Image (cartoon, rainbow, N blue to C red; front, side, top):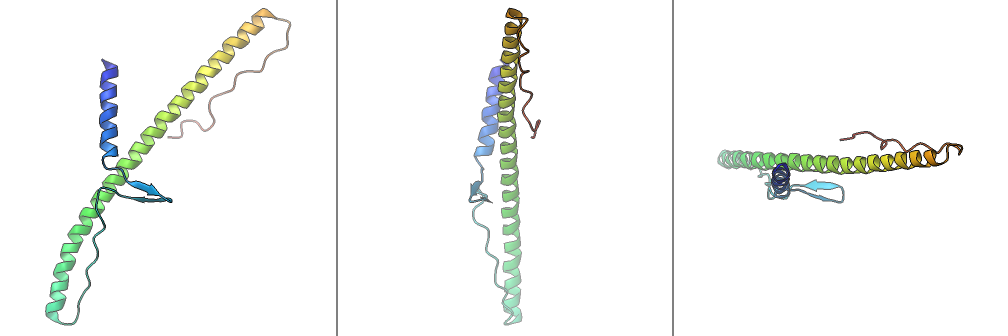
Length: 135
């Protein structure tokens, strides 16, 4: 039952973050689900009426740019979280593989030592992966 819950949670998590994933291209990240950044209006100072109309356009633009900004930040945070989780899971797989190999080397060394007690000591197994947890 735990496996099914974990699988369902993983699928939901993956769907959540892939639905709004940004795009990383040539070292630059762009939000993919927020549309294009609204273009700033031109402020017309040719007359008081033109200026007032420009301020109205500026107010509309500020609302649009805030919506775009909020979407972009939400998407960036989701991508960052998804990357962190994926990297942490991959690191756990690596650490498990190293631990398993260390156990196999230790068991094999013990077996060799038991068969020939007069033989020179074998090298100890390698240690944990360098760098520690990292994420």
